Length: 209
Image (cartoon, rainbow, N blue to C red; front, side, top):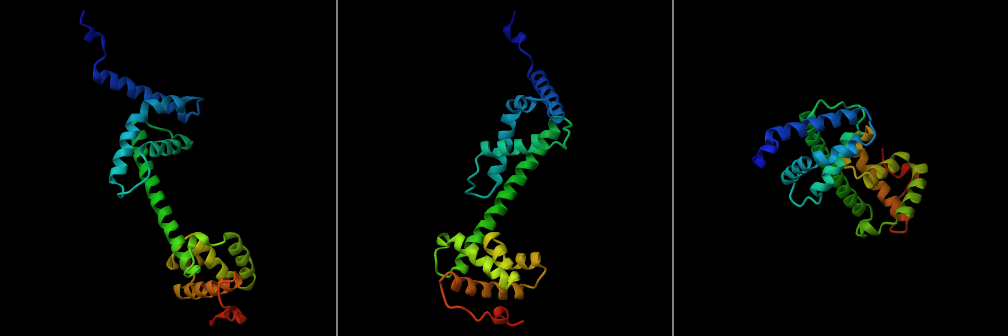
């Protein structure tokens, strides 16, 4: 008897695998213990191909590896208790979307971090932004907050959150001109408070209206 006849046809094997994935997806949706651990080996290779394709289309120089993207996306997918998977295709479509969102979130975080570094350099003028004493800055900010709460919020949003002038103005529902004025005042005041420069006149908030 031909040994190959005992082996399942490729289509039959694929159908059985897809059926098992669907069964486990239903089990995951019901919260059955161990179902997600059983599911990962069955979907890992396909998820990794999706991840590699996503990363190839991402910006050059991306540091995230396919394996890390797979695991982050998988945790998001199986951790969403509100989703009930409607089969193999539904799951992998959602996986591709999850990977896209992860890469977008990472790009946004990198942009915010880059803005925070630029804002730190601007805050400290010619000082190394990595050398900013965060504890001293936080203490000085608390003091600034008692004198000018809005200026202190501007520093929090620009320095710590890495927001641009435009984004800060939107959050505070203020004008960009006001944000720039608050930012310049706060920089000068904090530099003096932290021992880096002359103290501006802070009477009446230290700025014109």
